[in-house]
Image 1 (cartoon, helix red, strand yellow):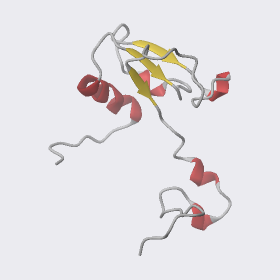
Image 2: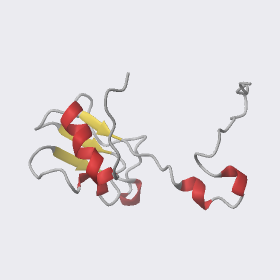
Image 3: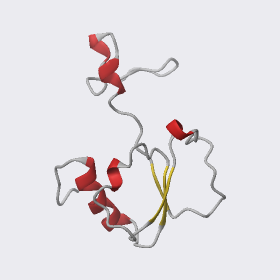
Image 4: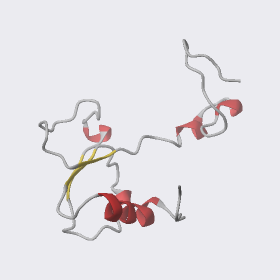
Length: 106
């Protein structure tokens, strides 16, 4: 059951998510760090952040961290990519995709 909801941008909402789920002082691996937009409104010193990104040569499928060293992993996969597709019927968020081998639900 949802007892509350918040509307806002990533930089505004992310500190609230951390406050609810990640204790201060935790080591956080943001494996899709990019430009660090999520972290803009998180006060310095609240978390130890290890920001990696494919743009800097780190693939989130093969992270450079030892087992049991990270308290929290942040993953923000691309969700806007669909807006750049050439076919207008294939925009992200405008329906569902069926992968080969999966049955369609009707």
